[in-house]
Length: 216
Image (cartoon, rainbow, N blue to C red; front, side, top):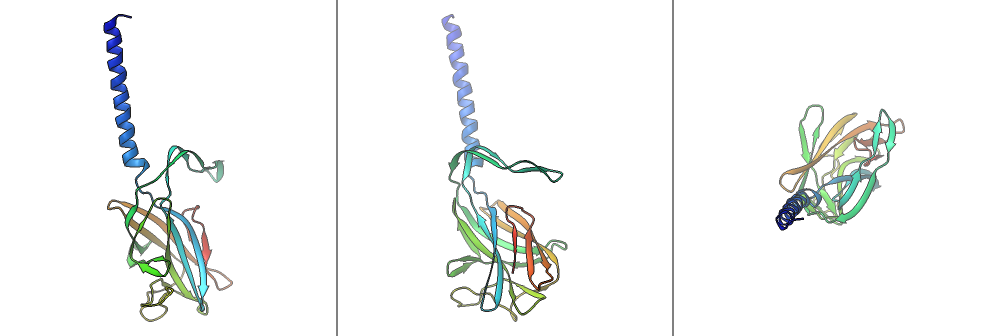
């Protein structure tokens, strides 16, 4: 092959390599390692006659490779989730601020508090591979109808919710939307459906199958 042709081929290959490298660099910098909050699960518990429902929010590592979600069509499972590749640490999800609203009316109800060990905060940072507990509802076990937005009692250690005066009281089967804003421009939203059971329990389900639900 003439020398000129070799030179032209080398230049073309170098240019293609540069463009692909720049594309992968931009893709990695803006997508693979950016924070991405997920609903990791739900939890219920009780103490001193008060039941609590909350959710776990995580910032899982990214995957440099294949990451396919479970696919269902008309109720039939097509394939399970497939994750193959190298884990990549995501950037921290900064200034995570959670609030809850009524789904039907869109009316804002309250800001929510995060629980970290024996502390409560309205804003937290969730680092890659970590998760944080977000309590949402509380209820007296002797009250079959009324439940409350989880708000911490001042000075309580470990944190305990306000029940009764000073708390936001709710009743009835309702659907709520929880929105978590983080890292300036990103957010996570999911619905919570509160229902009453015949056994006197209040059940809470989510619209994300991975998050499940529980009674409280």
